Length: 422
Length: 109
Image (cartoon, rainbow over all chains, first blue to last red; front, side, top):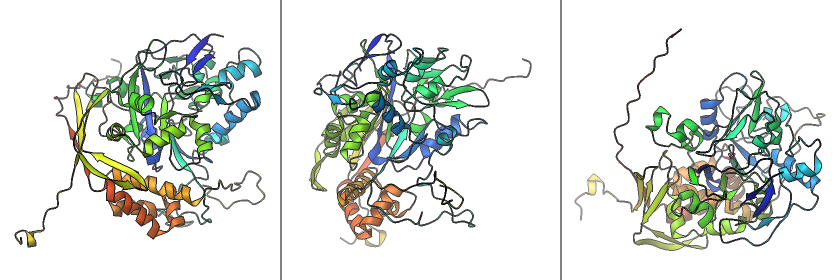
């Protein structure tokens, strides 16, 4: 099996195909600290792409309550368990975090879904360690979760107090997910028809419906379970990253790259999507003033989801600051502590870049900061805070300015009755 | 959420599992939501309304555990910092959008 370089794991790994990299890669950062599970993204995607007969169970974008929720149910616990069975006690990170763009989280010494398959699966045609979720696991994307319903016999009114259970002193958070458009997609690796391909211009992973025969190898292989089988067409389907919008060919875009529907609909402003430059060796090319490059490689606050699976996912998350660290380290790798530390005490530049989230639906390719004066200094929850009136300017694909944000101190207008009382 | 009454002899029925946190976790979660939404420009009343709503379980659970007064204190602390400023976003002037001609597809064309 050929070997490829996985910068998230800090080492080479086995993959069924030789490395091929796009010139730019579809990537995104979700700030989990802001997500309240309103499901606007979920419904934006559903109403755009998966509203037809046979797609009832499909949620290309979903938000699940972690740690107990999942769509399909227990997807991550199941694949983690399979990897542990294949390599007992060996799924560990080692090495030191590198300063450069290769191996920023250290080195993963365990087995990826591709390597574990080579060790444990027969026949040789089985290329990826995975499993096929049952119909029941797909059925209810939020089963037992916090979806309020009305009281029995009361129509058109939600229950005002929610489920009457004791309040446990527990912890949880909301994990928004779409296809990660991985650099080494497990779905692509597993497809015996070669129906799945990665576009060279933007790295979006697509599934050719004309080639697919519905073997469901991709559904079995994707560790994130983001390919889904459609019974009435007998083919599989997956998130297409709203590619007409990303290309700028959708009439609404006016010819300029635009973010996907799930990004656009986010009312919590947790999402930013972009197209990052990829170097010849598959790492992110130096692009210092690209907002995603800054968040992932400079501020190091955004981390890949389950990087140990080995697919080099292109979805990155700012981890929730209140969640116990061992759980977060399992989910996002050993970079969690540094990420949270950098996020709760943000640098001046990070504060400015966070202001770019959801200010426009156009894709941001570069930002610039015009420094202004310090306008506040104090403490918040015991930590020092400094705020500057910096102007952050976002630029689009052709270097054209999209928008700029500044900080404005509020103006208090005296009421009419006292307008001339001084 | 199941819509029927649970069947108590059903082995697949939910068994509650508590992943214990302590008060510091709840407090940090409450502070995180307050900070984030104060930065988004929400007012004190809007943020407190979010905590009170049962639909937003994360925030609501913190509100039920810590109580209205403590949550209000946390929100006040966040709003005292982030609420004193407004972030002003200025869009650049769009060029005239390119005309998008409608394409007519005729039957048997």
